[in-house]
Image 1 (cartoon, rainbow, N blue to C red):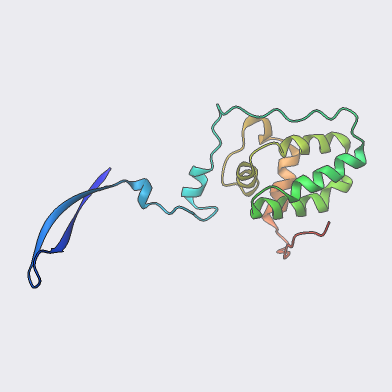
Image 2 (image 1 turned 90 degrees about the horizontal axis):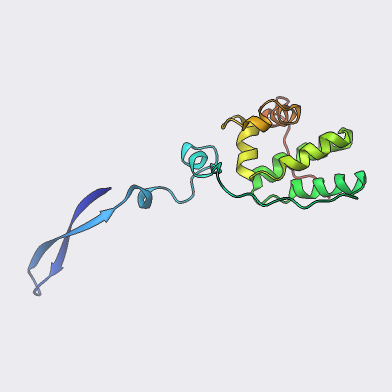
Length: 159
């Protein structure tokens, strides 16, 4: 915690000023940018998902058809809540969901249960993924897609 001293001039009479000291405590948190840019060290640190955080159990869908599963995954890939994740996952879904097997689709469904920023930073290589995702072919495909080696201009796919 840092403490700064500010001189505050107060008008005591019409033409004369007297100064007084006022101690104002300013913490580093208050001085920090409230909206750090994605990819900056501040943003990466502030979006870290605690490992001990209680996770919401995903809904069971025992009788879901493959066609319904694909349609749901397309929708969930588009409507994540952050533009970066929406664009990355929606274009990945457009390019890959049609050719994925049922097991790969179920694995992708489990990946979508993770936090938006976690998925984004794992795909872009800014943060190391947890052991359960570190060596999966799905995450590797997503990383290749995120690198965009063909320098394709990506737009949100139409529904």
